[in-house]
Amino acid sequence: MVLADLGRKITSALRSLSNATVINEEVLNSMLKEICAALLEADVNIKLVKKLRENVRQVIDFDEMASGLNKRRMIQSSVYKELIKLVDPGVKAHQPQKGKPNVIMFVGLQGSGKTTTCTKLAYHYLKKNWKACLVCADTFRAGAYDQLKQNATKARIPFYGSYTEVDPVVIAQDGVDMFKKEGFEIIIVDTSGRHKQEESLFEEMLQVSNAIRPDNIIFVMDATIGQACEAQARAFKEKVDVGSVIITKLDGHAKGGGALSAVAATNSPVIFIGTGEHIDDLEPFKTKPFVSKLLGMGDIEGLIDKVNELKLDDNEELIEKIKHGQFTLRDMYEQFQNIMKMGPFSQIMGMIPGFSQDFLSKGSEQESMARLKRLMTIMDSMNDGGNQCGFIINKLGSTACAWTRLGRRELRPGHRLPTSTQASLVTGLKN
Image (cartoon, rainbow, N blue to C red; front, side):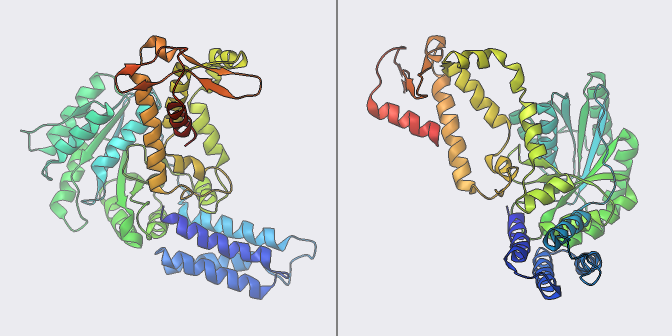
């Protein structure tokens, strides 16, 4: 993640405080110079950077500071608070209500990743047991409906669109009415990409909004345009009531910091950030955890939430079996599924204090996931008898495994495995 570079530079600047024997004005100025340079490299507006520097200097007054105070901690705390202000508009985002239809309309520039993000958001709610669906009201771009159809089918999300109807207002209204009747809770409407200078498309966006009366209008912004996000966000906000913002492509561009701060300057809350091309590469954006992860301080609260989502406490039967030294392949399969539900490994690593989101390279993360899926495929090819074959856990904690499936050949429980097969299985599990 490119934002990790910004985090490393700021962390390095803060670390210089720990290395300094005496904390004085010179050390503070040197640290602020490094932090400001890192923020400017990330395309943060110079006025915002200047304001951050002035605010830190106002808080840290060496002449009036009591001798017993921990100067290092005060400076670090002040920088942390100012970084939060930089990306926090101070406005609460709209929260959908369970048990009733919540219509969400997507707007944004062409090529910002709206259609993909629509599917990601629907999938996010689907995982949380909401009834989510998609409506394609983009009749301007060729292949827009095909793209949404393909994404939705892959994620098993209900969708609505038309190859014959050319009026996006009619499609949007018909789709929303249909899904409301069917009791869907999250109805996401994808609209055509448009630019602030295209008056006719802006007028069309207003007509769609008036027809479906969305509970929340989400502006999807591409992080690669940096601080230019502000002008676009303001233009969209003047036409329709933009309630929140999703920033995409934060994993691949150095201007992500500028995009986040620019959007915050428009008083529009950022609710999600896109951190990759996969369907689960969409992170809820919370200012304090985001800055904490950026500085390598982790996000323990977010990690606990992810673990709680798995409802591991409900699995009392498994806990009881493990206590008695029993752990079958079916149990292992279920735990693998739980791991994959938590999202990308890099995202989880970023929540642990001392690690950053780029602790695992993209290559090694994909390789680990591929190995995990390969083991699950082996288990899928086995019958119930094979899957009930278990690990025998002895008092020393070592395990002996008596199963495998190579190609279409199955070894029954209790048969001795070749050493090479055991080694490959253990290597697969360890990695």
